Structure formats: structure tokens, C-alpha cells
Length: 234
Image (cartoon, rainbow, N blue to C red; front, side):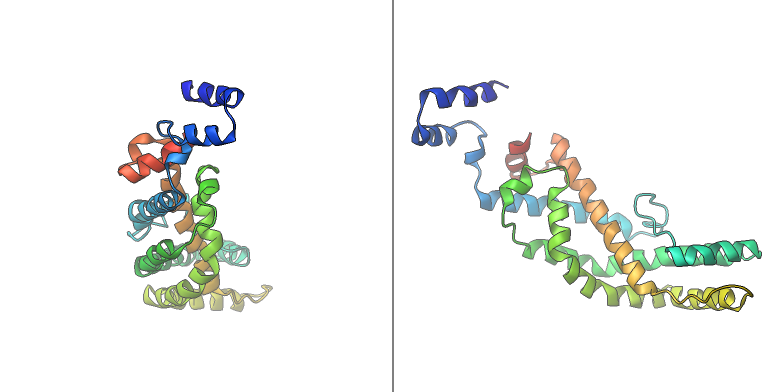
């Protein structure tokens, strides 16, 4: 609060040149941290999100038992699920939902290096404004800048994982059962596309959790760089 009063009073007594000079000398002042340091701090926060939060998704039930990211059925499959349950095939419907989440868990395990690389390569064009934005600004920026690239790399991994955990076979069985029932309209969903998008959403959700923690919880800033950079937005 004292620093705020000082900053308010300074313009009454000094010109722009003097103000710039004084601002650079204020303890912890905004001008004491370079854009390069801010960008490095933002990358570190995102790296921590991958290391501490995204890795949770790679465990068994990492998606399935996490209400924040659990993959539910797309609209066209929700009617399939309901119909199967109505005709006594609840166990098949349950297995169908579980294997979609299993595929995401397996794929994230294989694709984590993709996210690490994306964070290292990202260029923050306006790091200071991102730092001073909302609690998940860096995660949102990462999402916007890398989504298309990550999808292209992640989709084949998802396709492989769907086959690996048996999801393709389970859903072929489910869809064939459903399509053979009378008075039902045929469905043929693009499961790799759907699971890819849902898995990516889950990854960014978990990274955002860690970014928010670093922004709002001083004890989560476990490096000198995080403490220095994120003190600017306190």
C-alpha cells in the first residue's frame, strides 16, 4: 500500500524522465524485471503445470475419476448410451465411457513431451500484459498459440491409444449393437477427433490450475524467478 501512495505522489513532483529513473529504483518495482525474465517466468509456471498437474492425468483414472476433466459422451453417443441402458446393456455402456477416458490417459502419457516442447518454443509477444492479466492468462495464451499444432501431433497418438486400450473395438461393438436396434438412426462418430479435443481441454485445464495457484499462493512460487516475476501482479 505504501508503494502505491508513493507512485501516486511522484508525478506531482517529477517529470517523465525523473519518474522513469525513480521507478527503476523502487524495490520490486515493475521496471526492475525485464520482459525476458517475465517470459521465462511464465514458461516456468506452465512447465510446473505440466510437471505437477498434467502428469496426474497419465495415471489410471486420471481422467475417468477427475470431475474437472472426465470425458463424457458426445451428444450423438448420449442417445446410444441411453438406448443401450434401456435395453439392459448398461455394462457395455459403462465400458464404452471408461475406455474413452483410458485412451486419453494413455495418450497424454505418450504426448507429454509435446507439451513440454510447445512451452519451450512459445514466444510471448507481450509477456508483461499476459503476466498482469487474469489468473490463467498464460495458459490461455499457450492454448491459442499451440492448439492447431498440438492437435495435429496429438490426434495420431489418440488414434493409437484408442486401439491400444481396446476402445475402437468396444465402440465398434457398441455402435453395431445400437445400429441394429429397430427405430434407431445410424451413428458413426469420429471418436479420435472427439477424444483428442477433450484430452487437450483436460490438459489445459490442469495447467491452468497450477498457473492460478502460482499467481494466488505465494508458497507455490518455489523458485527465485517465480517469486520475482509474479510479485509484479500481487
